[in-house]
Length: 117
Image 1 (cartoon, one colour):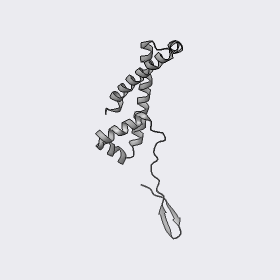
Image 2: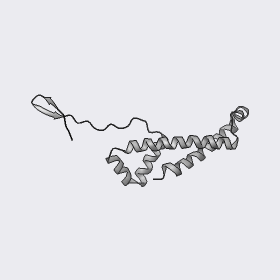
Image 3: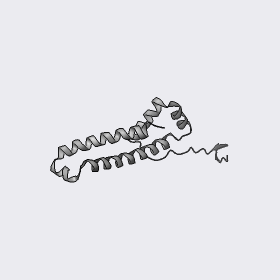
């Protein structure tokens, strides 16, 4: 390990630069994964936290979960005939169907991605 120093008066102070955390905001699925790790897999959570890889892991899981959620919603809507024409014809029915589809897709994502190792 190579250290560099900065002279401050009569003293040499080491230039310590910590590893930067990855940029990104934790959204719904990332926060769900963090809560699951804290409550049910505390050893894994502690290990990731100590190696400074927790946020990187949470962002990766979040990205994967969001992509899977979008694909599932699109596929379920197509298979059940929830289209823009239905939205134009009966908005409340369309909203009910889409809310139902999103709830089912979220349940699948939770079981397949968030709550598994």
